[in-house]
Image (tube, rainbow, N blue to C red; front, side, top):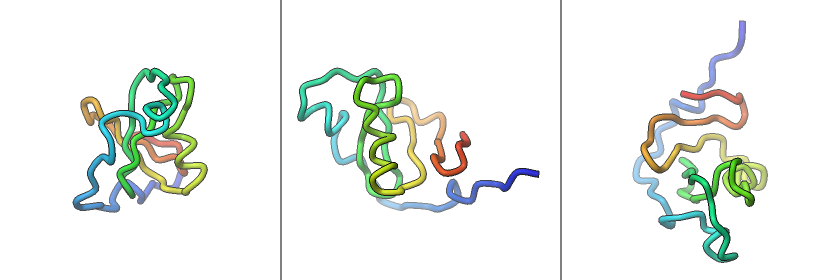
Length: 85
C-alpha cells in the first residue's frame, strides 16, 4: 500500500505570493503558460508546460515539497510523493 503524503497537511499560515507572475520569467522577459506558488516560502514559478519550468527548478534547488496552482487554487502538488491533492 502506498505511503500517504503528509506534506499536504503542513499548514503554512501567512505564506503569500512574492510576485504576481513567475519571478524568473519576469526578470528574463519570457512568457509562461501557468504559474505555481510554493507553500513554504511564497516563490512564484512557471509550470512544467512553460519553457522555464521554474516551479520545478525551485523545488530541485530548495526541497520545498508542495506548490499550489495560482490561478484558481483547485489543487496542490507534492514533488516528493508525486501526488495531487
